Length: 335
Image (cartoon, rainbow, N blue to C red; front, side):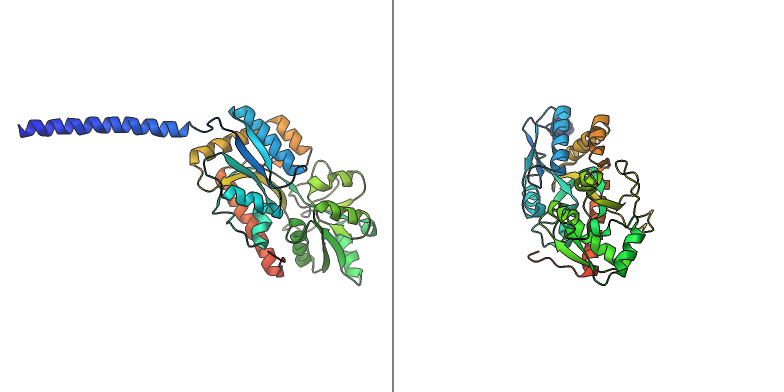
């Protein structure tokens, strides 16, 4: 009798195990197929409407909506140099309903220069790189006779006073790049910060400051219109839109490089299947010839990456800017 009871108990537990396995397998399968769930998905833009960030975010939102059958809605949250949008994203639920366009400002230079209420690595899930565009060193009328970096540096060394340069503001890449350039050349420069790179370029064009280091996306129209003279770009290769302008590497500074980069991240803790699904969709979109052509027209080169590669890229970029800030002893008021 005991053997019979033991046998029945064994069969009962075996049956329960089989049922449990089936149930759990179904639950796991369901968990992997409930995203997207039909609800609109936010892509936060860390800036006011207009400009390159809008173009990137809205292009990706439209393409993702078409590909995934759910609305991806681009939402502008400006202010604080991207910190308000970043904090909003970091505090969002990790359910795949909130993402943001991260960039060199929000996750590269900001953590190097500011005391942030979040950790740009630990409080985010970095999902996909979109692409990057170089910075370009541009000069105004006082230095327009210089046709090369070597000629520019010779002229600046000959002067009895530091050259002035405009930036988009303290701690931005257009500021930190010139600090890095000062270390590399041994030439002192006088920083003139502005509230955005647009006003900084206006004053270079007017001759009120000597040069600036904007992103090429912002400067291209003025270079093509002969209002700014470009001497070198920070990319590894020349840019098709201004093929006559050499790289810093070609100009004898192979270690001097930088990108205005853009990608998609979300709050920490997003499930891996959502991360992998979105990464695969973004990378597929970046192979679309129309998207490639649209971005290239704005000097943005697509740069598909895995989530792991993108996370490592952000970590390296932030570390680079932290070193520049430390080496130069840079401080920003209120940071």
